[in-house]
Image (cartoon, rainbow, N blue to C red):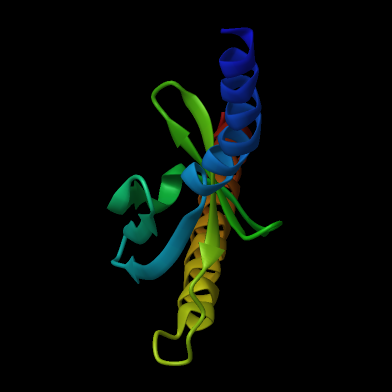
Amino acid sequence: MTGKMEGYTWLIYLIYPTYLMIKGKKILLEIHIDVKKVMLKSYSIFGGRKELNLDINEIVELDFYRGFVIKYKTSLGKKTETFHLNAEPWNNLYGQIKNLKLAVQDMEQNKIENLNLKTSDIKSTANNL
C-alpha cells in the first residue's frame, strides 16, 4: 500500500507543476480599440477563448515582462494579466499593442490637461475675489 502511495505522490510532484504552468499560460490573439473601450482576445488551453473588455480609463500600466503585462482597475482593486504573444506576421499584434499604448498615453495627457485647466480656473476665480 505504501509503495502505491509513494508512486502517486511522485506522480503528483511531476505533473502538478506542469499543470500550473500550462493553466496560467494565456496567448494574446488580438487587441481591438474603440474610442474609449479596449477588447483583448486571448486563448488558454484550459480556459479556451476569452475576451477581456476594459475601459481605457481602467488601464493602469502596460509593460513587457515575461510577455505582455496589463494592469487594470476592477471593483475589487487592481488586477494584473500576463499574456504570451502570438506574433505571426499576419495578425500585426505588435502594431495593435503600439496603438493601445498610444491610446493610453493620449488618455493620460487629456487627464493632465483637464487638471491644468481646472487649477487655472480655480486660480482665476480666487484672483477675482
